[in-house]
Image (cartoon, rainbow, N blue to C red; front, side, top):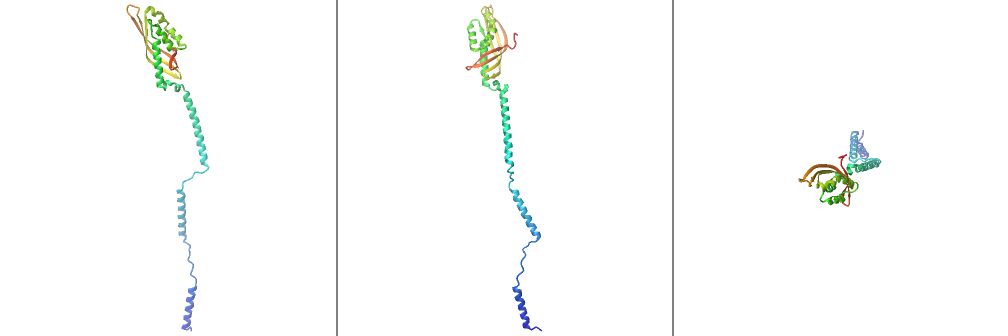
Length: 230
């Protein structure tokens, strides 16, 4: 039968053995559910970071796109240049009577003055008619005008004729550089002063003239009677 001393010694040995036994290692492994949640959170964070970053175009596509754009712009420039040249060559665009009000007014004013002088004749002052021819006519218009006024000149002295022409309307059809064409409407009065009582006849005339500018002056180069007398 063990004695009290033996029991005390046994308890001491057990206490010593327990004190010197190493403590069990604490497990660092996380539960499977916790580990899964952590990995899911990390993937979501990474995905959000990727979404927040601006998308970059593939390096290989940008130069190709610029090349296509350059070709398109070059083609458009060539087409625009061709169209602009075609527009400039069209008669309507070259006609300054449609685009240049100042030049149109100049042509109308000078042609009106010339017609009034050229187609007016006073038997008492024939030199004025000759002066008008030198000032306002050139080219074949000189011969045309002579033929048109020949009957007046032939009868002027005997009948005491006074022919007065007044332009009432005129329209510039074309101005192309230094050349122009003008349509003229005029009233005419022909008075015989050699009779006991002056006799006056009235009429109207419509014709076109072609003019050329030189030295700042528009001179008539041709007279078109528009088929009258033909």
